[in-house]
Length: 435
View 1 (tube, rainbow, N blue to C red):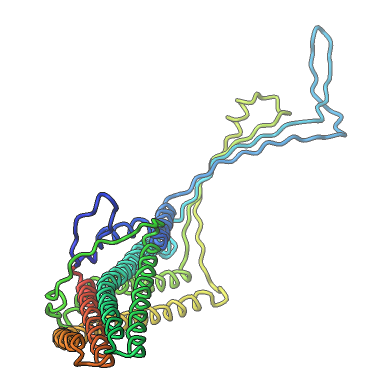
View 2 (view 1 turned 180 degrees about the vertical axis):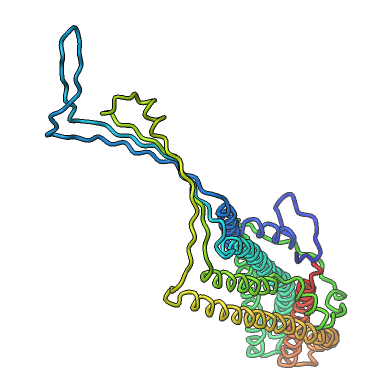
């Protein structure tokens, strides 16, 4: 799991979610992930059914019927007390009872290959679930880092707003003593309003990213918030692993690659099943049954015994002409083999492209961060000097505002490159299988 950022203690007054807690909660509650788990359970049931199909089947049957012969003249004669009486039964009752068994002894190993195919399908369903889990973890990490970045960016905006307010207050004082025009004061007021807008916009973006994170976690807590671990500059300046080493490790650990390999094995089994359609099928059958009739002079028990009938047999089915069904199935299975090979190559290409993208971003953002650190230090010194000179009336409003804008941009660029580098490094470790 992706847990490279620092984990800190959760507040008892109001829970603040760490990255670890976000991921663990999502893995248990995310609806998309739960659907993939249901698909895996369904594949397991298919496997169990195909395994049971290797065994004989047994069924019991019974048939009960009532018959009527309206023109029957003969019946049953009975002598009672020297008197002969004859009764004619036009309505009669039949009953039959049976047990039947059937077993496919051999059908070109189609049934056994179907078990293998369903076992692979179960493994692929589990890998689909693992891939979805990985995707959710990546999304959570990206949102989490964006929230951390915006949290610090808001702090920069607040500092910028406070500086703008101080400059505006100083400008008002200078207007009162005639050292600044109202036009220049209006520019300071506009700068303060711009900083207020930027602060509101940053807070809105922060709320939006928190909303997206809540949706992944499947929670509706209005007071949702995350822990803010300290992200040091050293994390962003850590060594970036080599691209080939990351890719080689990912080939052995990523579920989408293993899924594509299983698809190739699955296509091989499907080809064997297709070829088996042209082979003979040997089956065995067996049954035992009996029947009763109300017109018989024998009792029900005697009839059940005397009418008992048992049989056992074997059948051989040899396909001769099947309207090209077997040939078509074989050709389509071969096409599926080629498709599976191409899918594996495509997945490997996509994986390399994804890793290379993160690796290039990590290189670029780390270089930007190094430059941004120097730039922020330079702009801070420059702005401090401009502010002092502005207070003394040695610098005009335009120079002050330009200096403040340059400092704000440098700080924002530094924060963005810092957190983007940390995110890229965490994702590279994730694909490398280290977290």
